[in-house]
Length: 174
Image 1 (cartoon, rainbow, N blue to C red):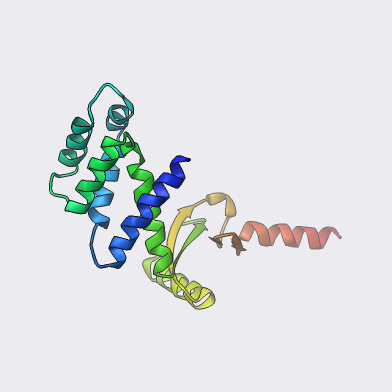
Image 2 (image 1 turned 120 degrees about the horizontal axis):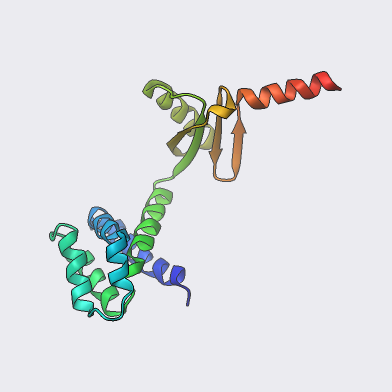
């Protein structure tokens, strides 16, 4: 069984806990952040260290005060030598939560920074067109010259000045 299938099983169980009202997201994010650190990743991958040490490192480095559910998860993963999957599991849980909340991620590329008000307007307009709440991830790329390029899933909406100029150039050339 692949690691992503294993991670998906754990993520599904945690997602079910979240749906039942148990708040494990913050604690899961904390232990995943710890497990993502290079030194901890090396420790988790090494068979020289016992599971109890791996568990203690993750729990103590994440603040020491985590929910019983997440602590049991860390213990179980450490005993099965799968604690390195924590970041992947956390990412899958977050994705499941976002999908359940009907929330989409929109990658927006702009030539220069846009104001908070413009971000809200853009998010609202995309929410109306998609029927779902839209979370914006904004990046800058001076090569588009102006305007913006919006990517939602496999859709791409290109309002960049570079694309408009290229279209005008093609129209004038023919």
